[in-house]
Amino acid sequence: MQIRRATAKDAEDIRRILWDTYETTWKPELTATAIARFESSGNTARYVDTRLRAMRVAESYGTIVGFVDWERDFIDALHVSPLHQHQGVGSHLLAFAETWIAAAGHTGVQLETDTFNRQARGFYQRHGYQETGYCPDEEWHSGFTTVKMAKTF
Image 1 (tube, rainbow, N blue to C red):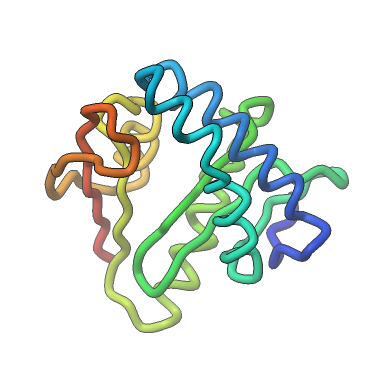
Image 2: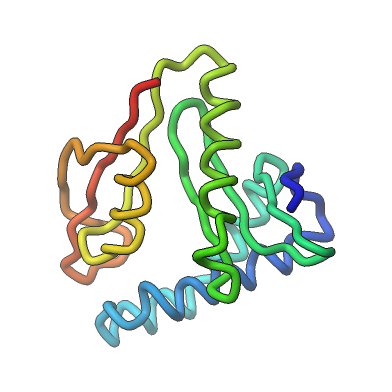
């Protein structure tokens, strides 16, 4: 597996990974209203178009299997294709981002997930992250609670 900077040709694969993880992780938890709002919003395409140049992708045998996106000391997104989860892709992407964040002079890293997402919470806890706070998740409008997590280097 290789981790590299995303290019324009990766945009569709990144959108596909985002959609697949939405379908398997978030959609089952959302209200019908939130599903309709999200699926008609175009937010996924806008996010990829806006952040593509900053993203790093994990490529395995010519296939994009995951990506990570961060700004300063905050990981905005880490997604692995459901077909490639539990194979170490997420761990490699996380370590890659942490290395760059530390090299930029930050003493730690932060991120957010949702309380219902036990898989993500467990993943980050296994990698040394601690839950540091909770707040209403205003992105989905489905009554979720955001979990703030952090790790000190």
